Image (cartoon, rainbow, N blue to C red; front, side):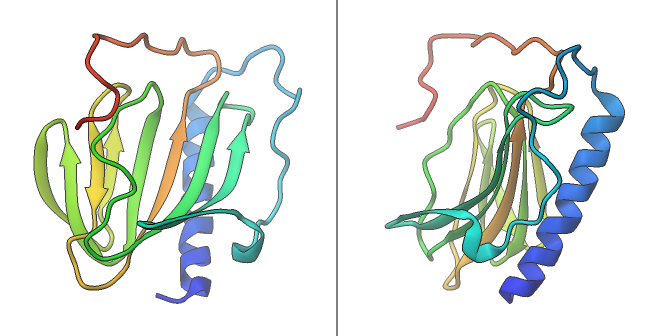
Length: 163
C-alpha cells in the first residue's frame, strides 16, 4: 500500500475516531488548555521510532477536547516480528490493519489478522499483533483515556507485558 493510501486511511480513521470521542465523552471545565490544534501531519514529519521490528510514526500525542492522553500512530512491522509481546495498559485502544497479515492476540486468544480488521481493546486487557506473513504489516493505532472519565486502576499484580 502506498504512503498516500496509508495517509488517506489514517485521515479517515482519525476523523471517525474524533467524531466518536467528541460526540460521546464528557468535556472537562479546563478544555482549551494545552490541547492539540487542527493540523495535517505528513508521513515525513511524523516522529519516527525505528527498531529491529520495523518503525512506528507518531502523528498525534497529547490532549484533545475529549481525551487526556491520545496517541495516533502508524506502525510498519517487518515479517516475523512484533512491536512487543502481548501487553496491557489503562487506555482504550483501536488497532486497524491497513496492509499485510498476521496474528492478533486478544485476552489470551490468537486469531488471524488481515487487512481491514479493527481490534478494540478495553483498559487492562492483554493484546497485540504479530506479523506472520512474508510482507510488511502496517497498522494504525488510536489509544486514549477519555477526559472527565476516571482512569481504571490496574486490576491485579500481573506484569503489563507477557514474557
